[in-house]
Image 1 (cartoon, rainbow, N blue to C red):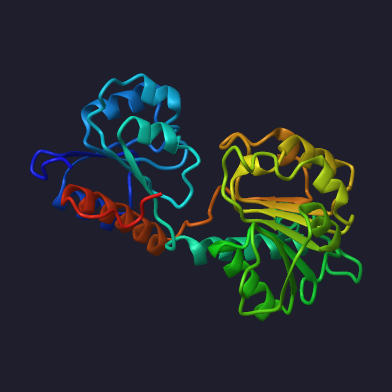
Image 2 (image 1 turned 45 degrees about the vertical axis):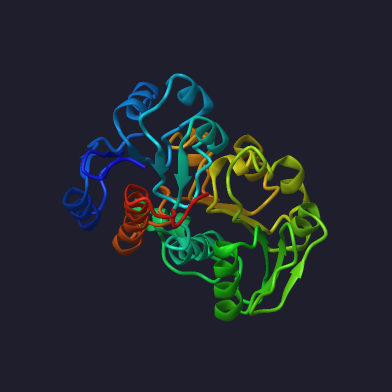
Amino acid sequence: MAAAGAARVLITRPMTAAVNARAQLGFDVEIRQSTAPMSPEEMIESLRAFDVVVPTLGDAYSAEIFAAVTDPRCKLLANFGVGYNHIDVAAARAAGLEVTNTPGAVTDATADIALTLMLMSARRAGEGERLVRSGSWQGWHPTQMLGLHLSGKRLGIVGLGRIGDAIARRAHFGFGMEIAYVARSDKETSYPAERAESLLALAASVDMLVIAVPGGAETRHLVGAEVLAAMPPHAHLINIARGEVVDEAALIAALETGQIAGAGLDVYEFEPKVPAALRALDCVTLLPHLGTATEEVRSAMGHMALDNVAAYLAGEPLPNRV
């Protein structure tokens, strides 16, 4: 624990006004003004110069970053976000740092974006909006832009944790969808749900496949050519998890050849780079990582991160240690 009066805190991106105000009032804080991820040099210096760092998505605290600093001053990475696959937690702990995150605060907002993408992809909403904006729309007719009727269809969820469960509840109770899933263990749910034997079996049996697993080495390219080939040709893939869970090249090939009907993406394998081939496809809906992008949710996430900072500086147990 650092002495509270002397402790220096770095927040790596500008936060909401409420979070910034609390941080400035409660801590000796520096708020980095760039919205871009930190460079390796900035991360190395942050470990030397600050007692606590509040990093977020894209701030890649890898084993190499920790190895570059002998006896780091920083003892806590209070991550802003539930996902922390950009932090090598084992290397952080070996270097004497704890890592926390912000679970719970993101659940409903991320589930809402999943449903947004499900509807947009199924009903070709992005394509339709582009048609109207282009001035090329010729008016309604009975076979114009026919999409997939979502109500009553079968939804497959890859990972039935907090967010996956919230998506399933919305889909079942809101749209009467049948729910199937893959997870490490059976889940107790408030709706009927069938655990599939495997990811391939799940992919083959659903109309809509939603990815809701954490990122990291264990799930990288979990959804690749084999899974996409198993999906029915009318099915859609939705990813609100982490971009690297889906093999982007395989997804582009599946969309270009009509192997699957469409996709809705809020995250990308090499974010923020989005391949031109993906951007050129009308059958894919692309959002700029909006999963938690509401003022209320981003403030709640920021306050949760600051709760972890305050607990550390007070010598109290960390509320959200990962």
